Image (cartoon, rainbow, N blue to C red; front, side, top):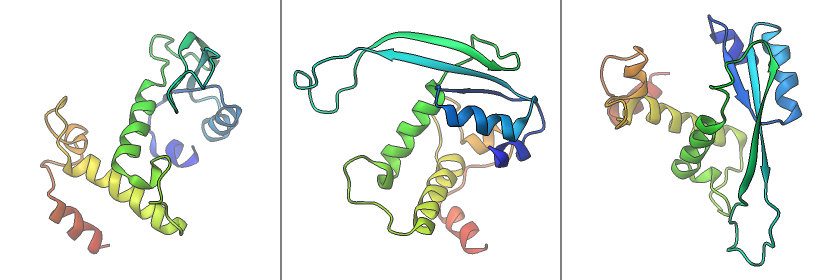
Length: 156
């Protein structure tokens, strides 16, 4: 959170689930300069033996609440971060469940995650925006090839 706060120039709106650690981290990093809301989902309790293994329970209700500042409650959502987590898990086998493709060293894990995000943001063309996220954000003028990415990494 401290790293994120140091990179922003405007007041952010942040959404999370109700994990207590988020509230403290957001407050320490942003002070009162944040609009923060949380989403609490209540899930059904079902007999796990009746379901397929790893089937998620049904969501019974969703409660949104303002935690700090004045968040736009229509925008309080965890959908984007949940989708991002899904994408990372699908593209980076080190984060897949029940796999032996884990990193034994933290530096290898960090390098794999960094490589994923660099590829995702600079090389991968996204259908919804018809370009890379870096191009959409105005950071880069053209889509990188994997060779461009490798050359950039080797230059550091």
